[in-house]
Amino acid sequence: MRKLAFAGLAAITAAVLTTVGVAAADPPPSSLVQIPSFGANPGALAMYTYTPAGLGTGRPVVVALHGCTQSAADYYAHSGWPELADRWRFEVVFPQQSTANNSLKCFNWFSTADDTRGNGEAASVKSMVDKAIADHGSDPSRVFVTGLSAGGGMTADLLAAYPDVFAAGGINAGLPAQCATSVVEATNCQQNDQRLTPAQWASKVKAQYPGYGGPWPRVAIWQGTADYTVYPVNGTELRDQWTAVHGVSPTPTSTQSLPGGTTLTDYAGQVRLYSIAGMGHGTAVDPGTGPAQCGSTGAYFLAGICSSYHTGVFFGLDKGSGTTTTAVPTTTTTTTTPSGTCVSAGNYAHTQAGRAHQSAGQTYANGSNQAMGLWNTFTIHALRETSPGYWILADGQC
Image (cartoon, rainbow, N blue to C red; front, side, top):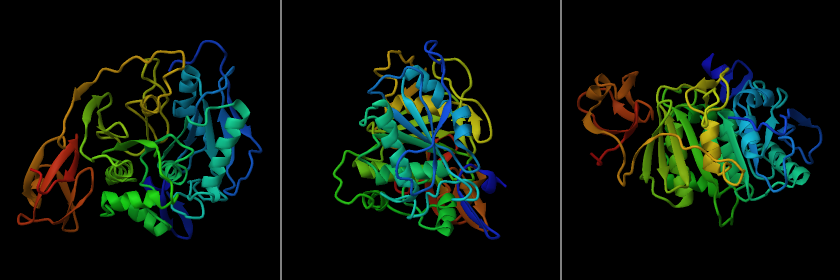
């Protein structure tokens, strides 16, 4: 049920495809509006927008993609993006999937007919961006995209396919760009370490727009350590992919502790990984009226921290909006070496200490789910804790 209802990905069951603030006081609030015609629509998607009343020209655009079983209205109601749009003055585009395209309304992030430049759903989203810019005189250099799960997977694909369109992206419980090209591969991507090098991951991005010389979109990655729909290893793989695309080291330049058990790891300002201890599958929200709060809880909208707020700050949406962002208290440690405790031990000892778990006689690191081999005292590995409860293989580093 977790996989079917999830908000985002892929599996075959029977013959069914299952993939996967404070608002400005003046002017008055607007509402979600469907745009019936927005140009070429080869992916047969619906376009909805939220435009703050009195929005001026030259403002940013954020594309927000819902997860499986969800709708544009769900993401509008719970994600917090509309209230941030009121506060910081930008338009939000909410693409909507249909059951005709996917039985669970998942964006088809695993299909080359839909997730590549000029094709299918990806091309439809590009048309929506063009429409938003034309209708409101938006700033084409400040177009951003974010999404949950299947929407997060499509976000990564859009960043790869249209790096000339999107300045940055926010991927919530999503997957690396072009991880899969079929439903079977999609399920494997959700659950398992693909054992690719950062360079191999980067090549999947760069192959989507041959000859493009940059700049590449900056990327914010959100991942719960207890997500067993889209396993936490996907956050690590996304980190590897986009740091390699940017040509920056996968060694953190800084770490921060944020509310909700969140650890922010920054990589030269180009890539950020937000790891949320104990969170399952969903978009993190923090209902309330505080300066860093936004969103509301619901199915796959989980209380803890407002990811949309922090992603918006990462995008720079708070700058030049006529409002001042209040800093969120953090505990910051700057490091030039991989962060966290590093332990070298046998696989049995790792599982007994809670650093790993075993299944069918094989051992897997907690959090990253990286395969460690046989569950015994003779198979030795080093594990490093990069955020609470999130362990990665670190052989030769301890």
